[in-house]
Length: 200
Image (cartoon, rainbow, N blue to C red; front, side, top):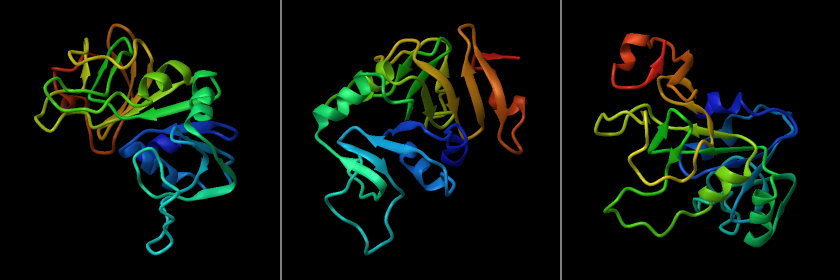
């Protein structure tokens, strides 16, 4: 999924990588692609994960993982970082999800009854980034679909997701269902099940 998401990134973009699977996207950017990866904790120019022994505990992403900084990268406080997001200077936000609705609504921050410390920067990202891409498994650990007609979980943003990349394929919310952009190798339409609102 992370490798496929890297194909959505073009030269000159400023891209925010959310916690979890999205952080892996940095490892699949080809050499020579001119991209600045943004982390809301105050880093622009985030590189791939460091090799063991080369970690700097002061250089971390929003998920508290050690990362590297590419040439020309910079660090700053979170106030400036969120000014970049809210000012519309992030071209693409890549986030995880618990549910995505067919109209592009996103729920990715809370499951009722579970202890959470807050929404983090996701609400700002989905309203401030020029485009929102979701990386997520097609189904939850319990087998429930994550692509749904309407989100049952608390929303992070309304109508904000333009594309979802999953372990079985790539889907675009279209309002009345999800258009199948492509399927993963070996996956057929029949494998997706009848409980997901897909556009044939």
